[in-house]
Each structure stands twice: as C-alpha cells, then as structure tokens.
Amino acid sequence: ALLVLDFNDQVSNLISGISTSLIAVTFFWGVYRLVDVFADEVVLIAQTNDRLDTNIIRFGRQLTKALIIIFAFVIVVDRLGYNLNGLLAGLGLGGLAVALAAQEALSNLVGYFAIVADSPFAVGDFIVTEKASGTVEHIGFRSTRIRQLDQSLVLVPNSILASSPITNWTRLSKRRLDMNLGLTYNTKPDQLLSVVQEIRNMLENHPRVLVKDSVFVQFFNFNESSLDLRIICYINEPNWGLFHAIKEDIYIRMMQILDEHGVEIAFPTRTIVIESATPPIDVHATLTPPAQAYSGPRAAPPESDLSLPQPEQPTSTDEISDAEGHR
Image: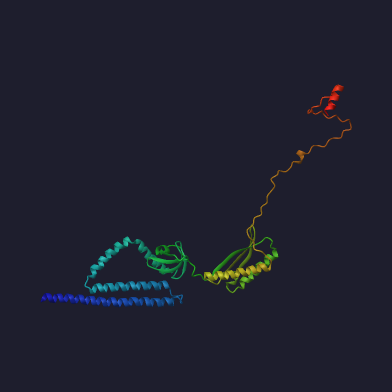
C-alpha cells in the first residue's frame, strides 16, 4: 500500500509539473507574441518621429523576446523537478567552451551592439560599404542583410560593418550638382559673359535650388578644345530619382540659354598640322655664277670626244654610178 501511495504521489507531482509548465509556456508564448505587436506599433511611430531610433526599438524587441524564452525555460525546468544549480553550473562551463570556440560569432554580436548604439543606418536605408551596396532589409545579431540594385541579397557580418566606412545615401538633406560646361572657342567674350550671368540668374531663381549664395557659375578654364564654365549648386531633393529629374530640367534650361545667345557646346577636337617632307632647295648651291663679258674673239668650243661613224665616199665614177643605181 505504501508503494502505491508513493507511486501516486510521483505521478501527481509529474502531472502537476507538466500542467504548470504548459500553463507557463502558454503564458510566455502570448507575451512573446505581444512583444512583436507592441514593437511594430512603436516602429510605425518612430518612422514619423526623428527622436525615436528604429534600431534601438528592434534591439529592445529581440532582447525582450530572448529574456522571455530564458524565463520560460527556467520555470519549466524548475517545475519538472530538475536541479537548477547544477544545470546553471554546467551551462557556465559549457558557455565558456562555446565562447572560446565561437569568437567570430561573439565579434559579430559586439558589432551588432555597436551598430545599434551608433546607428549609422536603419532598415530601409540605402548604404554603400566595402562589401556591398544596396537597401538594408534586416539587422541581425550575426549579420546584416543588404538587397543590392541587381536584387541579389548579400549578408555582411556585423563585425565588418562596425569597423568599415559606411556611406548612407538615404540620410542626405540635399544633393550637390557639380559640372563643367565647355563652350567652343568661337564664343565671343560678350557672349560668354552673358551666358554666365543668365545661367547664374536661372539657378538662383530655380525653385529647387537651395541656399542662393551657394550658386557658383564662373568662366573657369581654357581647355584644349573648349572654354570651360564651372557650375556648382545644391538641390533640395535627397531622393536619387527626383534629383536627376531636377538636374534634367536645369540642363534643358541651360541649352535654351545657349541657343538664345548662339553659343555652341564644344566637343573634343584635335587639329593636326602636317609639314612637307621635301627638304628646302639650296639656291646658292644650284645657281652658277654669271658669265663675264669678253670683247675678244671667242674661242672655238672643244671638239667632242664622241664622234659618229661617217659613210665612205666613192672614189671613182664607176663607184658613183653603182651607188646611184642602188638608190
């Protein structure tokens, strides 16, 4: 009878522990899900409030969920009757061994905390790094997911991101337009000055150009094939696509100004001068001195050494008649 009672006590304790554990798991699972709902609401608020950092909110959500899992595990183990002291001691020694074997994972975790604390970028930002460039989709404990322009997904370890330069193009407040405009050398000085002044006025009165005193339009350089104008201004548009649309509008207005003044845009040209390969003639070496006047009798020219063969003359009348007969 005592054995039966002892068995019944063990079964009842086991059933009680399992039921309590199930209740605890259900409770913590509900809290776990509520953390996601609450964090999503806070993220939506942070997107409209610059004082709230979405990276810190996401980190708080992940940390809270991790703590919930740990608490649930401890309660379940305790209710099932296991010794927590021995378990925690074993976990401590095992954790030390895992830490020594997983130094890279720990460095990535430290990099994650550095990213959260410094907040160089957030989910949705377009960044350029040494390893990848694109839109940030997720910041995890180990790595950050970046969607590149070709839609490929790159996972960059947090330790690399935390120790490398990062350019965040999403956080621009304005964009700079910096260009050289080359005009042909046929442009007259008065035309050049008129074009410079009208382009400057156009930019200062443009609705999307910022800080009027920052507009710089000057004749800048005598280039090899053009007269260069340097044009610099800031445009009130951080978005990449809209910035290029505004830049296109500015370029069209510049072309209209050039057309009104009859000024052409230069393009690279080269003028080749080919010198004659014929050497110059030495006049003094080719001219003979003039003949001196001489009033005396002219000397007979020397006889030529070249003589032509002379035909034999007939010596008698018979030979003459024979020769005439042959004719």
